Every structure is written in C-alpha cells, then in structure tokens.
Image (cartoon, rainbow, N blue to C red; front, side, top):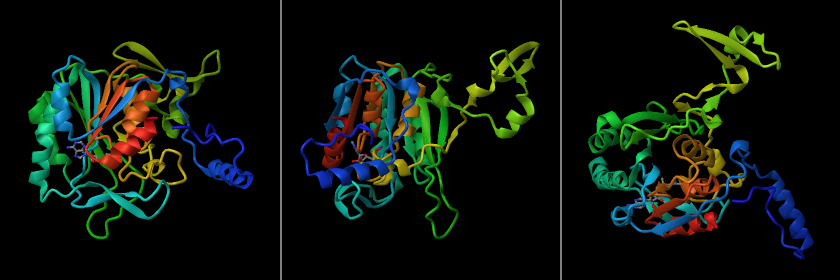
Length: 324
Ligand SMILES: C[S@@+](CC[C@H](N)C(=O)[O-])C[C@H]1O[C@@H](n2cnc3c(N)ncnc32)[C@H](O)[C@@H]1O
C-alpha cells in the first residue's frame, strides 16, 4: 500500500528503467492521507478463502466479535466480472467472480443466510454496512429489516461514484446505496470525527459567519431554546447522507496507486470514512466478501484488526498481496 512517494527503486537496477519508473510513479495520483490518522500502528489482517457462510458459522463459535462489518456483495448484474490481465492493463483476464443468479429471488436466497450469519458475529455495539445498487437494494432492505429488526435500521448512504450514467435507455443511475444496521440500539458512531465533516456552503459562510474571535477564527452564534451555540467556520458542518467526494475512479484507473485491477474495487477514501465513522482503534473489522481487500487494507492501516473472506481465488491472491 505504499504511496507513490514511498515506492522504492531497487539499487543497482537498469538506470534507464529506473528513470522511467520514477517518471511513471511521479504521474501516479497518490491519495492524500488523513493527517488525523497518521501514526496509528498498523493492525494485523487476515484473508480467508471460501464461502463466507461456512467461515462465519465457524467464527460464530468463538467469543471474538466484530464492531464493524462492511459487505459489498455481487450486485445481481447478471454477468461474470473479470480482473484486468495485469494491474493497469486494459485487457480482461481471468474471471474474478460470477454475478449471474438466474433472477432476483435466487440472489436474495443467497444473501439472506449470509447476512443472518454476519449479524451473529457482530458485537453489541457493532454495525453492518451493506453496499448494493438499484438492482437489489430495495428487496434486500426488506430482508435486513426482518433479520435485524426495522428499529435497527440506522440510515443509508447514497454513494455517488462520479462516473456519470452509462444507461442508453431509461433514467440514468449515478448512485449506489449503503444500508446501515446495528445489532442493538447502540452502535459506535464517531460523529465528531473530521472524516464526517464537510465545509459550510459558501452562501452560508458569507451570510452567517461574519464575526471573528480573538484568534481570527470566523464564527456564528445561534440561540436555540434559549441556549447559545457557537459554530466555527473552519470546523465545517456535519456530513449528510450523500457522499460524492470519494470517486470510484481512484480505485479503477491505472493512474492511481490503489488500483489493483480487481473488478468492482471500491475506493479507499470511501472505506476510510466508514471505518472512522463506526469503529475505534482496536475494533475488529470484517469484510466477508472482500474482493481486492480494500476494507482490510484500510482497516489495518487505521489500527483495526481485520478479517477478509472471499470465495474467489483471484480476490484472495490480490487481497493478500495488498495487505502484505
Ligand atoms: C463487489 S465484489 C467486492 C469488491 C470489494 N469491495 C473491493 O473493494 O475490491 C464482491 C465479492 O464477493 C465475493 N463473493 C460472492 N459470493 C461470496 C460468498 N458466498 N462468500 C465469499 N465471497 C463471496 C466475490 O468473489 C467478489 O469478490
């Protein structure tokens, strides 16, 4: 997971090659690291190959529980997804996983026992974040309401990958949805983390934040029910439920250091926000359908011991390499 800056060039290697490699790396887009999370010791991470249903049933017999489960299952697209031949190459290589189920009902029949097993391994302050798109999200919500109880539905994130619409007919679809459920009525929620803040709108800054304190910080005071609250412009406002600042392209372009070539890879910035929102340093994190291991790599970097599972050998190979 080295950034472009930290990539090492083997001493004594061919100088021309070395020059080219430096040039190539210089054009790679390194993802800026969240300064607040730097210095956290990397936690252990493990990838297990196989159907998560089998592994989850085994894990359920142990006392250790997970504070965060993020799962990004197949989307019921109806076709097989191939990995790139090599990282960065355009040509399609081996099939990474098949996403044809012969209809929505079969897909849901696959998902139900697995989300039930995910709930079993969650801690009492744990949450499940389940990522799908318009093809199956609505029917899956009915299943999750049943498995977790509708009162444990805590909200949803509309993630805007930023690729635009690819549909030639009918309304365009430019978002995916992440449903959030907690095991009990408690869940870890770090609402004040800088990862969950965004800048105030420019009009709001112009209209409301006209005063400055003795340190020169812009602020506004609001009185609500007789109590006055101070808001600082530089602290930003709480982030809403539409996230459009974690572009998918960071995970899918050869120009980006985090791209592995695995199909449907999610961007690290998205997982970083989810992990910072709903787990603590030392919390155990699980991704039972981990693909290229995005969740696992980010969780480990943020000091959360992480377990990834995937039944695709290609996924496990890429994920293991990534966490090494
Ligand atoms: C959408 S991809 C996950 C991509 C991942 N979030 C990433 O960033 O690379 C879905 C993954 O679910 C895996 N999968 C499907 N059914 C599974 C099962 N029963 N157990 C474990 N993994 C499964 C597939 O092999 C595939 O890698």
